[in-house]
Image 1: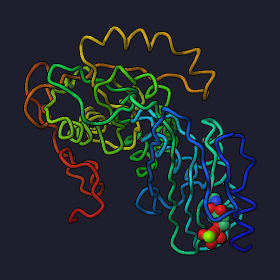
Image 2: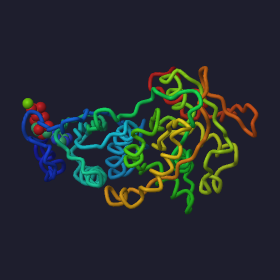
Image 3: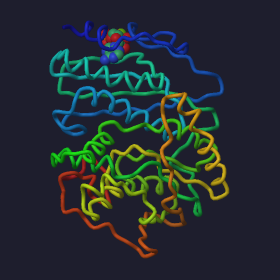
Image 4: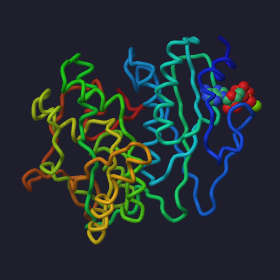
Length: 341
Ligand code: ADP
Ligand code: MG
């Protein structure tokens, strides 16, 4: 099967968006942007052996390649619209392409994202998705903007994805392991939540490297510090079934791949946040079959720099895991592809 057959068979789907003036098949795509909106663009690459374990199903890889990008748009308060796709493959494996495109388009259809172009080459298995969307001209969210006194909020249950990865690596079985694995393999981009946070959150980002590592980035961008109340973190029954308390806490604070939203809200807008969350379920369900995650207050922003955890009101340091295989386990770091081993 040749390159053009691959594109035609697996990546060319009917487009139902009026803003795609020219899609796959020409030299470039031509897209329409509604007046009063800004274009928001993100890109993520996933590499076999780095971002997914060898043996991960092609459908899970396709889903994930888009999900991590949609999560970035969610963090900006944007509504996704289009994507481009670069695939490098060692061979034209039809079974793999079938699964990959099924996983990719399953999520794309849920959010009405059109694939408008890309590139297909032979090489090591690497997938890059670029996603673009729009946000109202004055409505985008960013990591900068948190102020001392703002409440620190987190969606979802932190650590479940990291627990899922650990469960896969340790070949754990059973219901809890399956649930956590699903959280790792099929993260749910929080588009509806991101849209809802426009005009409410003072800063936002998605959690890909772990709560503490990503919170440090938000603090740096906002030029302030944060306290995290460890006792306020949502707890996962599935995690607690499989791992000892120390490991649960480490997954929750330092585990990556949850793709939940971490954001700050001025105390004066807390009521508005609660009202918006309460109003949403019906509307969100109709848009992308997306139910809103739980949102919890996990700390507070303050003057200064860096992140301090508190447990029962006392300063608390996350104990090291003693496991250097995955950098995400390091409480201080977050994943750095070029960090010295
Ligand atoms: P060019 O040589 O002009 O760069 P290509 O021959 O690489 O174009 O691609 C032909 C068309 O197919 C283009 O519209 C391109 O965007 C699209 N395309 C190529 N690979 C993919 C892919 N993996 N997914 C979606 N569209 C693709
Ligand atoms: Mg060309």
